[in-house]
Amino acid sequence: MNTLCFDFGNTRMKVAMFRKTKLSEVIIVDNDGIETIDFLLKKFTPQKTILSSVINHNPEIENLLAAKSSFHKLSHLSKLPFTSSVGKPETVGADRLALAAAVVYFFPDQHNLVIGLGSCVTYNFINKQHEFLGGGISPGMEMRMKSLNQFTAKLPVVKPDGNVPLIGFDTVTNILSGVVIGMANEIDGFIDAYKQKFGNFNVHLTGGDIVYLAPHLKNQIFADPELIFKGLYAISEVNNS
Picture 1 (cartoon, helix red, strand yellow):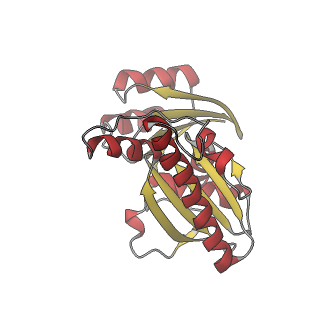
Picture 2 (cartoon, rainbow, N blue to C red):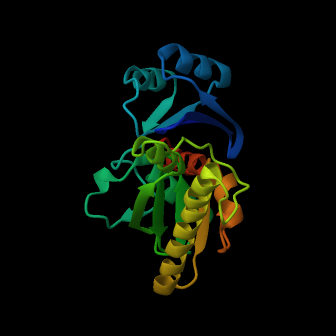
Picture 3 (cartoon, rainbow, N blue to C red):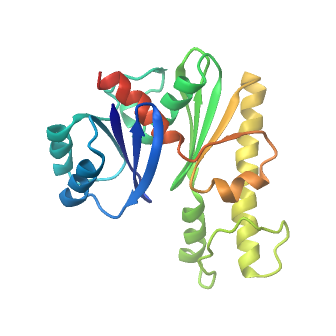
């Protein structure tokens, strides 16, 4: 049984192919046009599909996916392997729901903190009773880099780099130090605060900026850049039975 998982985020549109339970391929697509989606369906011939979208995607693709496969669109109405105590569950992003589902599926009966590194940094805490308690949201790395340029007269837009000095020696390295090491300290600070409240728990780091931030973290983490797709697969199995 093949499952095709679509993750449409603010920065990238990605697709993952699962052959039975194994993730076999991840690709980035340039657009959400009918031709693009139809090409993927013909290439992978999935029996099941699931879409997680936090953007205003092309609505016509939902009809195409439903016509060519057993299709599910992730939302607050989806059947999930956890409960939520947040005040307005319908406002929780589809990406955060998928991350929570992944850790419940692969790390059951344990406290889990999932930190997603995308356009925003999301902190998502799921306790060992499989309750999604909520968390926090802060600007992501690219957003921080661009804001320094947009809200000042002379600071440039700097590309992320994993080789960051603590003490910057020019404009570029000062920005890298402030943003990258600043984010690492923010993440470590959140982890330490959660430790005081919950004791032992797993910390999962996912998203494209892992390579820049992981070397600067002092806390032990599980790094999995494709964790969201594992969550989408788990949700698909529940909703596409």
